[in-house]
Length: 356
Image (cartoon, rainbow, N blue to C red; front, top):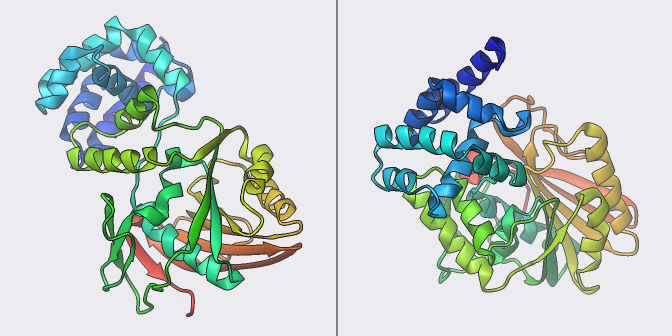
């Protein structure tokens, strides 16, 4: 490996350990720094394509091997929360099982698990239905987060200023802190009659390998997040959504068509558009417009400032550190769009802006 590339890769792992993982995951802090200091480990990582070398990808692949029972020493170190043992086992596993680690990294895409999305989506979807006068909705989630967003109506959500939404008896209970003076609307979401996920590589939580991969994407010393993910996956598994594989720009119309004619299709994107260039994001809006031929279609977006086309930015700066909650209703080529809120920390903190 050329010296310059090796130094850059080592720096990436050291920065991940000392900055990204610091304070959040002592295990990954220790493991990432150890990988950055091991020439053998860096050479093994170099065997992966460049886009698959970042720490979250390689660490998730190693975690997947541990969860599958194929790296018992690493699994034991993770279970014991022993940073030094985990660092040694990670290097050993990476060097001995380079081909296996690379194969997982190439085949898989890292996934984020943020239950706070539902706290943002629930009132926004209910608001979309209220504005259209819909008594039923069909949910179409783009970048479908393994279908977890599609069961937003089946979780319980408590907001810091008092109201609760969703199912108070659900095994999945979430909370979100509210800032600002405007309260969250308390309208219940209407009946959900369709749940459709659209993703280039959808993950089926009823498949053991796919479910394990979702767990592998979490950091091993965060048991509360792991328990939360397991609860949500169990909830989704009781009524698995329809998952459509393909480019969202090409599959979106088919997904919307799966929603019964007497229900409002509500397309949701939660940080799914930021990876797309502006041209593709504009095409996404065009595809929504095409899907609204002959029926109303709503789009609830939770994206970084300026990412979602046609959604006002409220004068916020692109690097402001929060996301805009947008609501657009397309009906026979008419577009009505509004920024209805802001959120921080993937939905853990929420400011509602829309009027009653």
